[in-house]
Image (cartoon, rainbow, N blue to C red; front, side, top):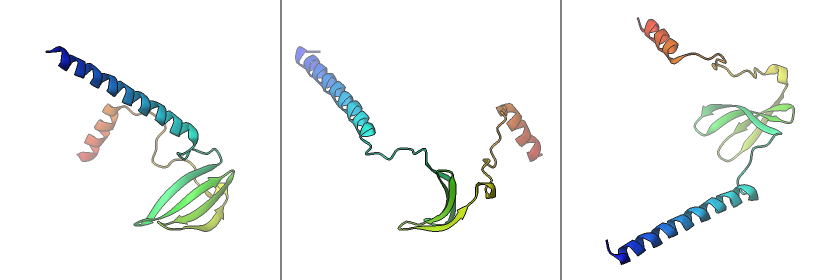
Length: 113
């Protein structure tokens, strides 16, 4: 390996490190600038249900009130207000207890028989 090729390798590594540093600081700047939509404590999408291609019904929470809206590619339509006691806010189909992988496989094997 000659000195010129070793020098070229060092320059290439140096440029790569500079590109990584610029990318890192640019990403941090974009995150702080608010250019990317951040999560809100007052607005949450509680549930989304697809009714057709590109058409959804969503239940959203604004503060402590709930609303049903229709969402399409081009529009958002208010459907109705909802009370919290009208909604089942527990996640369905999600078990909070931990199940081991072995138990899950045994249940699947027994169901297959």
